[in-house]
Length: 337
Image (cartoon, rainbow, N blue to C red; front, side, top):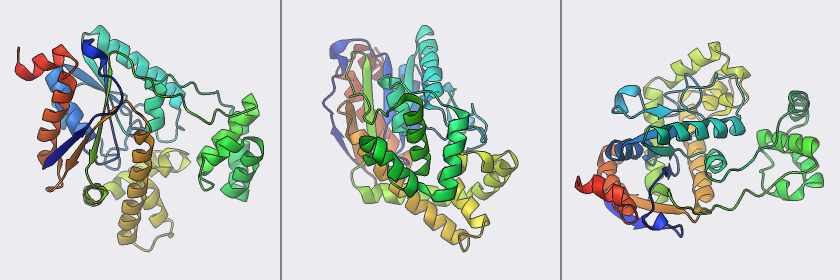
């Protein structure tokens, strides 16, 4: 494996104490495995920032690390919502800040780990979210079902063109939310706050050197998920209300299995292939999101073996070296001094 560190424009705090480490990047790049190793070395605790790992019972399809593989590292904000609950980024941000404060109070290092860009921005940059109105949301959901996302996109473009330009015309969920915000506040903040470097914060980005390498890892992961029982997990979650969940039912893998069972896909083979394609598209969107953040210090690796077991040791060494450049406690963790 060949590792290619690529530092971003953000500062490593110039020797100040490290008080928050974020590990970000596209799905299947190895964030979780690396974060566990970093937490073990640095006395850390992990705060989940994967929006779908917040849901109870969504384990196989979200690649949630089983407790036995966490090596004693405390994990926070896993399994906190039922599958019929809608996403709530503002609530997540509040819970994350409380978890981070508790970790610091215990004298440990919080690691914010995940690939959900909006959720990470809500914590790192203090992005504020307007409230919600269940009646307005329900009416817009009904209109979406009756007329389709294109009609909602046209309406949004008429009242908030910048917001409409930033949302795909096929993304009904985001269009409903944007129109809800327009009704409640009179406008939409279409642009997220500009990422700000600050002392004590380091953001590490994990990715493969070539997109084809991550594509291969994604395919391997999807195969492992289906072979490991994803359809059975979905069946159990249907009994728990998955189909009622506006967010959870649209998660990668889960959505495709439901489509297969609803007769929209021919068989499991087509279901697997569609899941692979959808996940690869999602990974490209994640790359685009994190590429805009100048704080991210990228660790890109050439993955010849296609497994975390081969990738993580070199990533760990490079990540610790990157951190040690500006933080004496990290340097001590590497040398044992």
